[in-house]
Length: 112
Length: 111
Image (tube, rainbow over all chains, first blue to last red; front, side, top):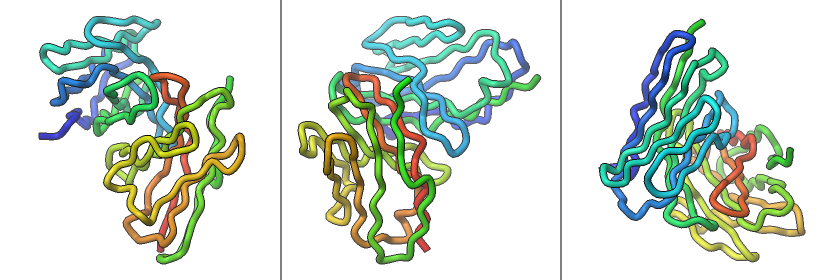
């Protein structure tokens, strides 16, 4: 079983749609959960991070963590063509200086 | 806004040659990392570095790899004898806490 699983997509949606991106993980020791956005041949850009279970909102983005199900989600409201990118989930055991374990990334295409 | 920078953006080298990839982390960050991403695959952790020593390394980070912080600003990754399978994007990252900020990457092509 992979440590972090993420559907690679691609996920194609019309502009203005609500997008749901998800990851599952197997290691219950993960405490910190992050979402990165990566444009083609660029470095990952941190979008959001959450600690333990619960929701966190930042503008059009909402991150959700359900530790009991080992499932995390990123919701994008009112999606825009500029949101077209690969979205990577990442997880860490500790807060300081710890490696990130990434999912494979989901390709998102928002059509105008 | 401060950012992580990396040089060169693209490096082509022959198998068996040594390469050094350079990174300038964000200035007040204390933790430094190298990751790599083979084309079409996930981002993989290589090594983390804190207080002038390696704090963690992956199985990928074998004796052919080394890291160094030669001065107060640069952080380097050296591959002693490159192999074809070392071809990948190499990302440097830095953090002061959980938030790791990535550089734009160096594309390494080994021929």
